[in-house]
Every structure is written in structure tokens, then in C-alpha cells.
Image (cartoon, rainbow, N blue to C red; front, top):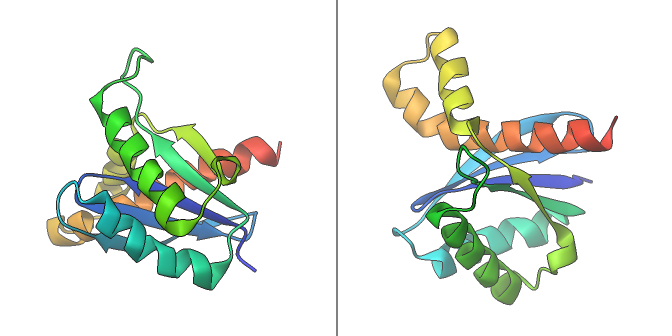
Length: 141
């Protein structure tokens, strides 16, 4: 059984990573119409029902100074739809500070000489993996 799913929520994509509790791995990228978080939640609903996750780890995009910005509003709108459409409880969600995770993902992909097209295809799920890794480190300390 997969225990955890990590999500990197964007305005047109959601990067998804999964874990059994020890190691996170990139899984897929969900694409949807820009800012259509109803569509996004519907697409994620199938995966959530199929995999039966224990916790959903969501990247929470704080500003560099730690304040809450407009991207937080986007994630909160997505979560609202996730709660309603997927019957997810707020206790099932863990919000993780995701500052710099996309930049870290891009840096890792450049280090292994991944071409630009592959970087674009994989950055969201790799960012989700990093978000999930942060959570796993916290609970396995």
C-alpha cells in the first residue's frame, strides 16, 4: 500500500510523487485548464481512490520572507475543491513549505544533462518528490 502522495500544485499542472513511507519517487504530472481546480481535483480523485493514501502532502508556496502570497490563495482554492470533490478531510492534508523546490528540481535535472523538453515534462513531479522527501525526513527523524 502506498502511504503518501506529494503534490506540487501549479496553475496548469500538478506534479505528483508517491511513497511507501521511506523513499519518494516521481509519479506523474496532471495537466488541466489554467486555474480550473475543479478539473484538477476530478483528475486527482481517480488516483486517490485507486491508491488509498494515508496522507496527502501539499507544497505550500510561501514567499521568500516567509509571508503568505497570492500563490497560497491558488493552493487553498485547489484544496477547497479537493475537500469537496474527493471527500478528503483537512486532517488528511499536510502542508509543507515548498520554497525553492522547483528551482532545486530544475538544478538537479541540469546536473544530469537533461534536455529542456525533458526538464519541462519532469520538473513538477520532481518538485513533488522533493516536497514529499521533506515530509518523510520530518517523520522519520
